[in-house]
Length: 142
Image 1 (cartoon, rainbow, N blue to C red):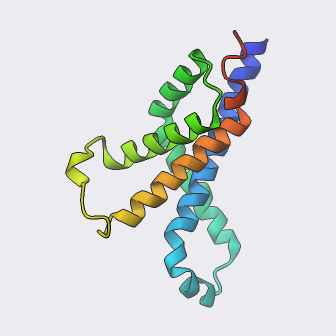
Image 2 (image 1 turned 45 degrees about the horizontal axis):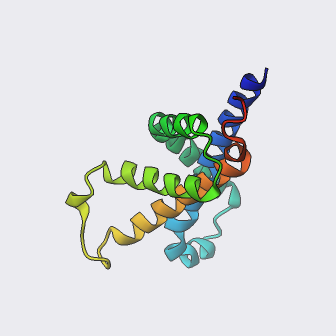
């Protein structure tokens, strides 16, 4: 029975971590144009729909590698919030770079620098939210 509860907790934690990543991505990408958007009178329902669609994309794209990381963390009973934040950032950056880190290395002020920072922040937020919900009890089913 404990394993079934643990699996459900992992699923809920993953879903809410994807929502957190989508919120950070939405706010991080819209921040430079926030004044333009607020002057247009953008309703909050549109922002929440962007977050919802973004969470679905994040969940679909990150599912295979995230499930591997979650399985390893459960197996080794990793319970540190820092570990989950770092793993979230590494996972998000590796998905955004396509595991070709050398091909995208550019100057810090380049056009991709801000997007990579936002993606890393989204991964950190997702990892931390997952840790809050499910990661603190990793390996407790053993």
